[in-house]
Image (cartoon, rainbow, N blue to C red; front, top):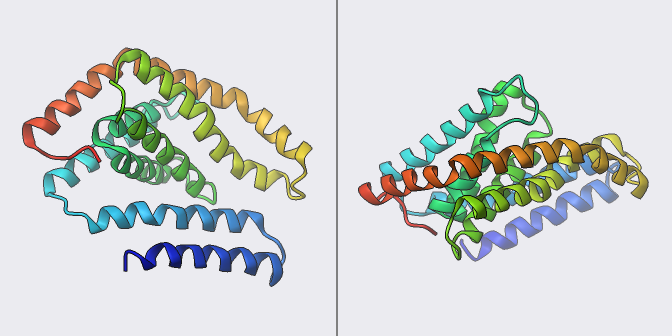
Length: 227
């Protein structure tokens, strides 16, 4: 089944794209949402097939809840949300797979407060990509306040910004013209820049301490392997 899984995903993607392009009116938004949802399945399936203790799941759930709270507590201040910092540190300590999972789940859960919609899969994949990026980067380098802040700033500005703004591109630019695409992305740069700067500040001030706290819990109770 493990060998068949990539084939099934690829076949599903091809079917959705062909169906939309040739057998129905072109709906890039539906195609993109479907692709994003299917792209998350390997991570969730891989985690589901793995062997996890109650402590492991509890730690992931706790960090997800903390990420949700960190977004909700700044509800009234646009783009000033430390959720990416929490997800990033989680990925740096617990690994890329768990970082991806925590990022996706935290955006899905917090959108019950901020509002669910067709943009939710974009936000889930975007924040999951931040956790994945931290996990991959800090597998090779030591997480310090400087390195955490730099990776946080770049991952939010580039990864999160490009993926989330794609939903706006598909919504406001139905003809998919290059001029329209660039205009939508340009309009999103100030918001992404603020979010990236806020993430970098939180990571610079609290990231290193947060890393040590999670590492201490992880080592003390033997909860997770960094994979």
